[in-house]
Length: 384
Image 1 (cartoon, rainbow, N blue to C red):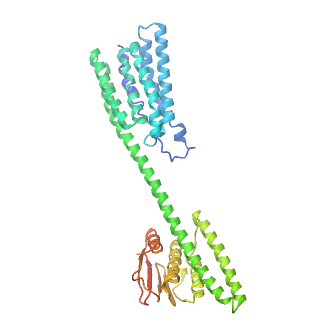
Image 2 (cartoon, rainbow, N blue to C red; image 1 turned 60 degrees about the vertical axis):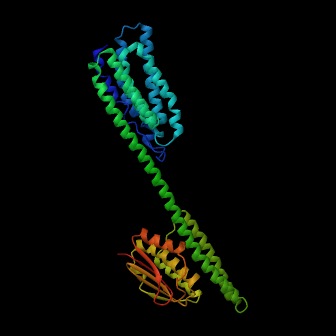
């Protein structure tokens, strides 16, 4: 037994190493997924201890040469495995299964070095437990932890030389705990990233559903009204009917552009632009518009949100209210849309109303929908 090999314990700090485990959502061209495995290579230098053990052993040259080759193979397999499978932790069951074969090779190599370096073979323990922690399943990690700790302790007790290996025997339990904590945090972090990604996808789907609903609902309502008007004008004023048909064509083109922009996440409109649009549609439907306030006092950030809500509120007036007048109240921190048509009594809240509430909530405002003092419905959006 070589007293110099009290340091094998130093090998233990190795593997747990800082070899990064990356989420599958990391940019493939970034540094960590491509080169992070090299951090595990820093710790391979501690294999110098079994190398020195072979050099000082009484083995013949062929035996020593075999030992050196086995250590080199151990280092190569260890590094290759971290490079290949380190991104699979908490992500891919297939990757964990594939990592079992290299792990078996490492165990066999360490066992094969036993006859050459004797009890110093336990200096491979930190590498083995770290491989199991980062590249195998949680269950396999604990099985390996127990076996390595038991075999290391048993070996030291059997040879009766506890003192030279006391540092390793202390380090192994510490390393096992640290590995367990770190891999658990990594798995939870990856799971949290997946949840955040799923939430982002669902949020984007909701956004698109609201936008497409609002765009199509408003545009199709306007097209329907103009089509009815054009039909009535065909018998009395052909030129006016043609003008309405041209406006229908323009509206459909605008709707298609809006849908393309919505799908691309680019749909933006101002309250001033939307106000002009809804007043024109209300006028076509022979609904009088009463405007209180002006759009110039509204913050640009709030303007986009209010433009969507104004569009949906007016679309509901045109579709369901059978109103003769629509009141639009605009102030720096509020928007109100009222009508004198049918009330909401007996009606269930649809996608459009939910969409208005969600848009207001995301903007930090409160959206209330209820009865209007004019007899119809009132939509009120307010900050503060």
